[in-house]
Amino acid sequence: MEQSTDWRVQRRRILEKARRVVVKVGSAVLTTDKGLDERVVNRLADQIAGLHDRGLEIVLVTSGAVAAGRCVLGADRAAGCMVHKQAASAVGQSRLMHSYDEAFARYEKVTAQVLLTKDDLRSRERFLNARNTMTRLLDWKVIPIVNENDTVAVQELKFGDNDALSSMVANLVGADVIVNLTSADGVFDDNPLENPEAAFVPCIENIAELNLQSMCRGKTGAGTGGMLSKLMAARRAASIGVPTLIVSGKQKFVLERVFNLEEIGTWVAPTQKMLSGRKFWLAYHLDPAGTIVVDDGAARALTSKGKSLLAAGVKDVEGNFGMGALVRIAGLDGATVGVGLTNFKAAELRKIQGLSSAEIEKVLGPCPHQEVVHRDNLVLDSSL
Image 1 (cartoon, rainbow, N blue to C red):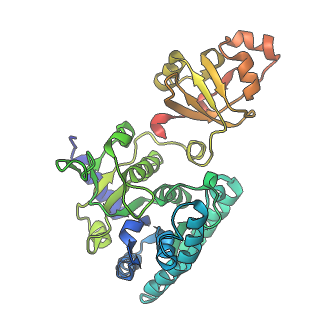
Image 2 (image 1 turned 135 degrees about the vertical axis):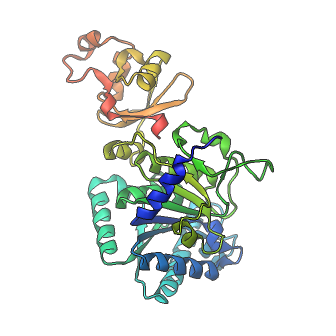
Image 3 (image 1 turned 120 degrees about the vertical axis):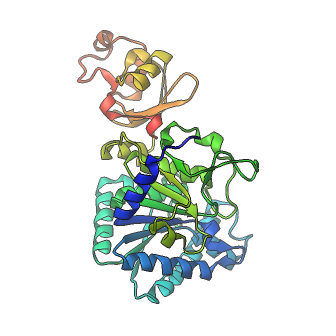
């Protein structure tokens, strides 16, 4: 994978000018088989406090609550079903925050616990409330410590992992960069656990072009994600202009070295063509209510020509959704073309699928829209 030298200039410039930083740390870094590793927590607090003293605003997205609870309750109690994991999180969350509170207090730093679910961010009003709260905390020089509210989140409202949460938080607070601390040194072009000849990748300049599934096989033992989840989160962040540095949290003084501009880890550059805040919202804060299957010609028109989706290209409709719902658009092979807001109910679409725009009014009567999904309300898979 050839790299230009421009990314090094970009990386140095962004890190030099960064003022608001999201630091994400995973369970594989924070915990051992005996529970929370207090030495890691203390070292992390020491480095973040040092960056804070330099004028950086830090938001810490942390894993570790379930792992901390599991070690108190025993592996058998905290394994398996979601209810067990939620109970383990309830036990572990207080222990996790207590450790952070004590560690940061040694440096006279005030921390705040922020627990989020996906539902908190897909409601516009709650999103703005969360943003205002986080902004005020940062204004007060408080260090927000963010985790998913595992205790109450149902499966449909979970972020899935804290890598995904970190990209959402970056959007929430308007971060300049994400530093994702993991158990690996960075990204490799293949899974190094399976392929000893896998090459280290110092920079990913256009993450939207990569097949992330083929690059990333396997995951860490302690966490819910792995390198795939980290790169998926980095792709989301890149789409709104926020770069991500994936770097080993097990290296000594890693955050200090990063902001002293040492070239470690993998730099995931922001995309040149950024999603608007509105399209980012459509892509990542809402869940599709159904699927519209389109023919090859419609798929090409959407992906290559910047067109809207018309009824003539619709081959099938899955689900029972209303007008204005977010829907997944898929090709005949089942691959996702994108997501978008539909101008028609599912029942209406089934009546007009395959028809030309001129024929729609004969079936449904006068319609304010001829497009099934307008391109302004469409986010293509390359941006997801």
